[in-house]
Image (cartoon, rainbow, N blue to C red; front, side, top):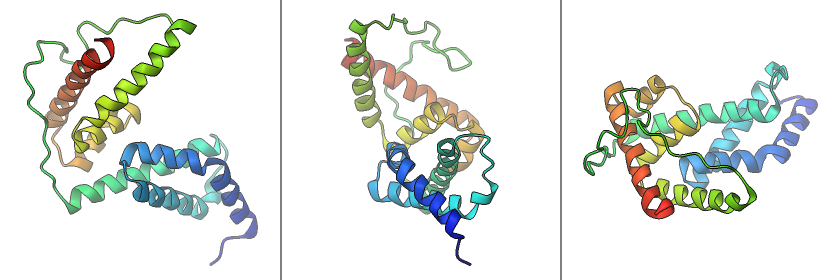
Length: 189
């Protein structure tokens, strides 16, 4: 059954208005242009199928991003099923007790005032963090972004990546430590 013309026009307007944003969102997470395009297309198809259920309780962008998040999780689930790459956490040394049992810094990074002078520093931080994230093994980068940027529940991440909660905690702990060291070398340094 073909979608109604009104529904089709609504989805076309969403594609026009939010397509680029959703593509960037997917690309940041999957790091594969064709896969990101496919995921965004799948999200729009799902939105078309369920457009009648969109009540407007949130913005269309928020609703579409939620659909895309689910498509990205499905993508990672499929990747985990199809090929186990064996990438584990990198044993790069001692953590020196930098984190407490709740996975938070014992001594948090110092906050700085956001003045016009500091905006350049913020830009440099974003660039350095991006490079540090790029330096992580792909699986670790995915896990970190999904947990810390997207706020995906640890139980869901364990299912998607085939990890135990303890193993996930260790991986996240090591990633945070690697990022801290990388930022100290390449940004604070």
